[in-house]
Amino acid sequence: MGALSRGSVLRLLSAVPFLTVLGATPARADAARRPGRGPDAGAILAGVRGPVLRPGDDGWSEEVGGFNLAHTPVPDLVVGAASADDVALAVRWARATGHRVSTQATGHGLRGDLAGTVLVSTRRLDRVVVDPRARTARIGAGVRWRQVVEAAAPHGLAPLSGSSSAVGAVGYTLGGGVGLLSRRYGFAADRVRSLEVVTADGHRRPVDVLHHPDLFWALRGARDGLAVVTAMTIDLVPVSSVQGGGIFFDGSAAAPVLHAWRTWAASLPDHVGTSLAFLRLPPDPALPEPLRGRFVVHVRFVSTGTAAEAEALLRPVRAAAPALLDSVGDLPWTAVDAVHGDPTQAMPAVESGTGVRDLDRAAAEALLARVDATSGCVLAMVELRRLGGAMARPARVPDAATGRGAAFSVMGLGVPAGPGAELVGPQLAALRAAVGPWSVPGPLNLAGAGDHTGLWTPGDRARLAAIRRRHDPCGTLA
Image 1 (cartoon, rainbow, N blue to C red):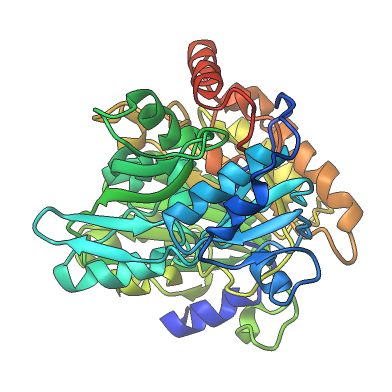
Image 2 (cartoon, rainbow, N blue to C red):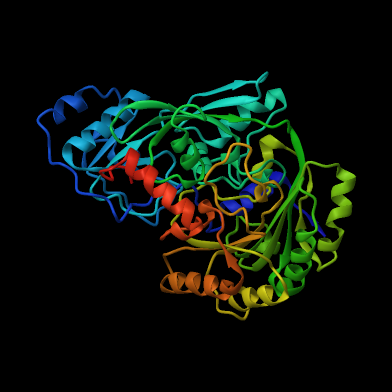
């Protein structure tokens, strides 16, 4: 069995054409018409401290560019917000001129071209303040998880961040946030204490259990068309290191590895998280030689238990087939990106996902028929994540996070460029159809683009619609 260092894992998967895309803000189809240009529109923009850019201006491309290159953003105006007041002014200008408002920090969740919108870039709102006694962090809207991880680590604390610390913390959390520690501690949205927002009328407001509790419920999990979050305060958890890493198997062993993993994953205690990904790797010389140009199965593992327990727990998976590479070991939380090894370079990607209530033999076989070596699959990644644990239980303060009834999530991701690009959309649809008989609502952040209304119960859909009408009657916020 080969050994794979932490650094090698990061270099390995930086070359892989996939990523987990979080935090998108798709347009609402039912937006009402807004008024035309007001006489004071120019005066509103004059108060903005950050850059205000139109197509063709210097710095435009850098300001609108994001991680997901599947779309080319073409907003009518970009406001590089230097403060929450800038965000408020941008929203007021949008209302005065009949525009919609989109927001972007890192661009991981970009799922459209933003035409006809004012894009508020929040990347300058990047301050992190950790209170180790309260075990909290106040996070600006432009903060990436890496900043929070590094600020919390000296205190023996960690945020409920996801598989990549390069992702924006706020967008990830507003979509629910399925993190590596979520089976033990719940969705990231469950650990939000308060929010600072700009509502669709262009006013700054505090949002928590006492102030606008309807928005507090909705924003934590439903994300879109509610308010622009400029900062949030979250709980940190007492974690400094984990037993974590990944095990790679050749794709020829996809069936035995999947069947071993699905029964094993269903039996794990709540302090253990795992996922499994079918990966089609490029023949890139940056990859370790055993993996170049191969179809592989990648089992990911994170535990807050002991090393001895981790070794015992992993025996059934390691026995399923010979491993190509195995990197599981003691891992400081500051190095936890090595578990998934998500890419760090911008790339085009589209994805689609669902939850499943169970991953029995029939469901696993239906999935294998779409992804194994004989299937003709062109998707760069098909991933299954074990959910459940604390994610299956109601949050202490109720929120709108979805996926509590799913035992696993299933997500496919493809690159809409190069050979096979035309097959990506149909194969994503076929993957969802294959597991359709077992489907239940999954996490919003893992659902991909499209209509998400089915993720909530009829009662919660009606509640969300009423909250949106109350706080954004003109449909200003995308």
